[in-house]
Length: 160
Ligand code: MG
Image (cartoon, rainbow, N blue to C red; front, side, top):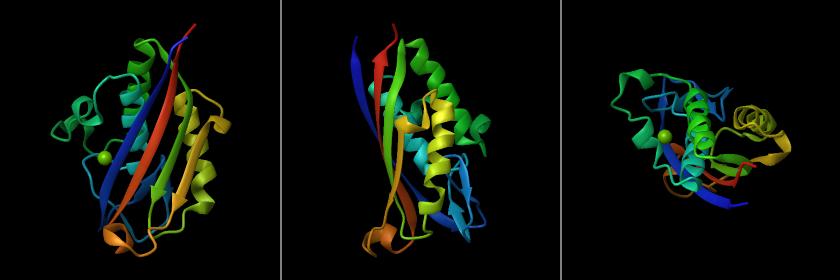
């Protein structure tokens, strides 16, 4: 059996007039993330971790922000397509871990729902998906509430 690990990172700006979607969950907040899709920064980091583990390229290559098909699309749909690619390459998910860096809003109450939502799309039990949140302690762009960032790692194994 072959085991592969991948890493993903993403960052989007916070703007007025957009819903805030993280891990497929809409989080109540006065602003949301700017982007071509729903700008779900956590799901984007998970997608890049999965693609990286399978050496299948990047989210930008598979889902370019110049393609009108992906305008306003739920990033969970992009995750579904990513899982199709990962499966076609002969891999399945062992586990995923992730961390969201956000000064606001407080995310703790939503982390379990995000993990459950992502696990359903990844084809694994919720116990195989970690979603954490950390405060940037007021430092830098994230600390100034200009954006939200996410990092993820994914472990894949070859299917029997
Ligand atoms: Mg992104």
